[in-house]
Each structure stands twice: as C-alpha cells, then as structure tokens.
Amino acid sequence: MPLTLFLGQSPLMVALIAVGAAAVGAVIGFVAVSLFSSRGLKQARSEAERILAQAKADAEAKARGIELETEKRSLERRQAFDREVSEALAEIKKSQDRAARREEILDRKLEQISQREERLDQQEAKIRQAEEAIDAAQAEADRLRVELRDRLGQVAKLTEAEARALYLEDVKASSQQEAAKVTQSIIEDAESQARDRAREITLMAIQRYAAENVSDSTIRTVKIPSDDMKGRIIGREGRNIRAIEKATGADILIDDTPGVISVSCFDKVRQTIAAESLQKLVADGRVHPSRVEEIVEQTKRDVNERIQKAGAEAITELGLRGLHPKVVEAMGRLQFRTSYGQNVLKHSIEVAYLSQMIADQLGLNGQIARRAGFLHDIGKSMDHEMEGGHPAIGMEFLRKYGEKSEPVLNAVGGHHADIPSTTPYTPIVMAADAVSGARPGARRESMEMYIKRLEQLETIAKAQPGVTEAYAIQAGREVRVIVDAKRLDDATTFVVARDIAKRVEEEMTFPGEIKVTVLREVRAEATAR
Image (cartoon, rainbow, N blue to C red; front, top):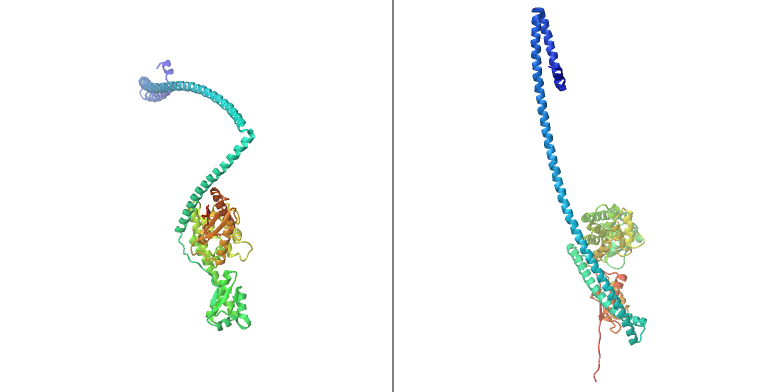
C-alpha cells in the first residue's frame, strides 16, 4: 500500500493495518525459518512473498469495509441533523405566526382603548358643562332665598335670629313627638321579636328537659314512740341529749309536743346526721353517751358515703370531667340542702341541662354551659362556714381547686348579678336558674315573702311621675298602672311602662317575668238637671 494512502486513513484503520502487518511478519518469519531449515532459502522467500501479498489484500479489504461503515454512519448523522434543523425551523415559523397574531390582537385593543378615551373625554366635557349649569342655578337659588328671607322679615317684622329660634322651637316640638312615636314603634317591634325568640328558646329547653315537679325537704323532726323513750333520750340530768348535741353539733329541741323531737342546725348535713342518729337510737333502745358516740360515727360514715355517691352520680349523669374530688364532695353535700323546698343538687342538674339546651339553640358551646349551670350553686354547700354570698364563695372555691374556665367562674360568681357578666354563658345560667325555680311545683314560697313582693311591686309603680294607682295581679306576674290622662299623653305612657320595668329588674328578685301594663283613660262627665 502506498505511504500516502496509509497516512490518509483513520487512526482505527491504521491500528488494524499495523496489527495485521505484525501478524503477517510473524508468520513470514516463522515460515522463513522453517523453509530455510528444511527446504532451502529460495522456497522460503517465495512463500513469504505469497503470504505477504495475501496479508496486504486482506488488510486492504478490511480497510475498505471500515471506511464504508464510517461513511454510512456519517450519512446517518447528517440526515438526523437535517431533520432536527427542519423541525426547529418549523417551530420557529409557528412562533413567528403566533407573535404576528398577538400583535394584530394588541393593535385592535389599542384602537378600542383609543376610542373609549375619546368617548370619556366627551362625557367629561358634558359633565363639566352640567356642573357649571348647576353652580349657576345654585347661585340663582341662593340669591332668591336671600331675597325671600328679606321680604319675609319685612312682612313678619322679625329678625333672622328671632325667626330661626321660632322655627327651631317648632321643629323641636314636632320632632319630639315624632321621635316618641318612632321610639315606641321600635321598642314594640324589638320587644315583640325578643320576647318571641326568648319564649321559643325557653319553651324548647323546658320541653326537651322533662323533670319531675316535686319539691323536697330535709329531715327536721324525729318521731318518738312514747314519753318514756323521750326521757331516755334526755338521760339523767340531760347527759344523753348533751352527748348527742356535742357529737353532732345540732340542737335537739324537746318540748311538750307528744311523740316528736325536733332537730335544728344551720348545717343541713349535720342536721341530717343528728336526725338519723336519733332514729337509730330510738330503734335500738340503748341510749347512753358511749352508744351515742358509736351511732353518730356510724351515721357520719354513712352520710359521707351518700354525699360522695350523690356527687359522683350527678357528675356521671352530666358527663363532666376534670373536677377535683373536693368539688365532687361539695356538690354531693347539696343533696341535703333545699331552697324554698327545692333540692339544690337536683336544681343544679336541671340548670345544667337547661343551660346546655339554651346554649345549643344560640350556637354556643353546650358543654361549657352545662358545666357552668351545674356548678353555679356550689357555694351553698359551704356558705354557712364562710362570709359572703354563695356566688362569690363558690367562684373562689372552684378557682382554689383547679377550675380554669373563665366562663364557668364568671357564671358561678355572677349568676345573681353580683359581678359584671363577661361571657354570654352567665346570662344563660341566670335564665336557666330562673326557669328551674319558677316552673310550677319547683319551690314553695312563704305567704309573708309573697305579700312583701307584691307590695314592693306596687310601690315601684306608684313612684313614677304621673301614676295615680297601681295594682299587682296574677300572683305578682303582672302590674296594672293607671296614669293621669291630663299630665301624660299616649306616647309618654310607653316611656313610663319601660321605666317601671327597668326599676323592677334592678330592685326586685323574682322568677320568670313580670308584665307592666300602663292604662291612660280620659273620662268626660256632665250632669243634667
């Protein structure tokens, strides 16, 4: 192969030719050695030339094959490159077309915007012309108003200040009358809507919670079978009765009433322990100081167990959690406390359910309302041991034993309006408390307190200016007020009714609601002779 042809090949081809030449040389050398040793130098040379020619022919064939393969691959790559260039050019043309279309759209929008600006300029010009016309008309109206005012002043012989004062006085009088009518209408509508909504929520809560209308009372007397047993209870020189009073802390009252011994104590738990201890002593028949102490201790354990059980059962019934054992015990003690004959623990459970139902109707948290309603009277279990009202005592007791909920604490401390209400749950508990105490059969009220409340209601009504008579009717659920028709007009009677109702709310404590009806009557009398 010529040297120029050899140097023009690719490196791979050169390497293959070199390897082939080396192999051929090795073969020729081997053959030359073997021919030289066996047949002679001449034969070896001819054989070597033949083999060399054959090797060259093979190498040239392999080189041509490699060159053809290389050209084929180059052609394929060139074709692939041409395809990619064609696709890229097509994509560029599409982008140019899209840009051209967008440019046309933008041109149309710019043209539309220009047309709108021209229309706006025309409208602004018209508006300026209209404003100038209005200003001119206003100036003319002001001139005519001044001229008319001067003429009126000349006719009426009044200065401007005098006419203004007279006009304002007339407007004030008519406005007051109109305002009273509007106020009356607004108040009537608001009261009607509020009363209907409140009545709906309250009735729904009462219907959903159907409790027994049964009043309760604590044990205060113990039946004695005979006067002999009464004497044994007293004991020699009164030692037995002194032992009972010392062990229980209650006063044992024995008078001439046959077959009855009375037990008196401000602590209803101790009163119960004393009464039940007396019952057990009467049943047992053995009455002496050591037996008294034994019976009293046994009764205390029984009553304490009942207290814990009553508190735990109430907690379980309401599904409350996280209450301290001291709180549970305090609620259980309310089992022995009554208010106007109503058991306070049952009242607390009832208030809890009513509070939850009212809160649910108003879209508030029923669990918080139920917890606050249940605990609202907890101070009554210890108000005989501490100074202050039971709302404040109960709030401090709950705070001391881990109650963290501010709505619950505020409801307990403020359900008698002793402190301001900071959450909506306090008025809810107040309403539920009133509903529970006011429902028929829930409480017993003494005749003296009943008459006192009626007299206070009439006194508040008669204290209003213009009222001549006031009568409490329907067991104190309504007060009829008669006003002087010469001093008050129809519109003012509504103000009087509202003022009386407001004073009743501020100064009286009552269950439910009291209706105030104000009557104004004009009587004309004449005598024929």
